[in-house]
Length: 222
Image (cartoon, rainbow, N blue to C red):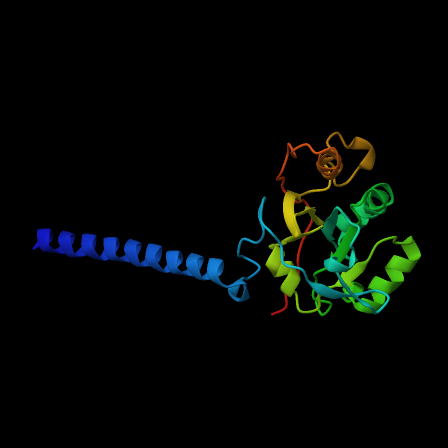
């Protein structure tokens, strides 16, 4: 009797493991086949991936897409927000990145992925006010549907994707943090985004391609 119970238990365990593996495998396959089933938990773009162009509303009310930047060599896409203290800490550094690299062909594109219902500070009106107050030199786009943020696989604010145009396509070369000190600009020792863009501008491969983005979790719509 004990032997029969053990055999039945083993079969159930194996069956459970197999079914879990099978359905996980199916879900992964579905995610690869169709971007429409991507969620905030799904892996987004990775190094070497070609991104799809998008169109989002800028703080001036005009719709903006990457294809409009015909002379750009690439982009520094930064998912950021108004309310997050980490985003605020990096604000001046993001403006400095655009001032340094936009003229060299790598402009900053800021995207606010947050649900303004979760934080009023992230509303479109407050995005406009903050950009005016700080003197943003770059587009600050509202991802109202959060589709673009999920497509990229963004999870934090701030989180950066350094992109480069290659043969008519836009390819991911770096993703993660801006640098290695979110709280103290004077304590920065590794400037990940600057190093990545500098290498791309000189035709060299990016050495550090992925780092952990340190910031606030994106507030997804329920």
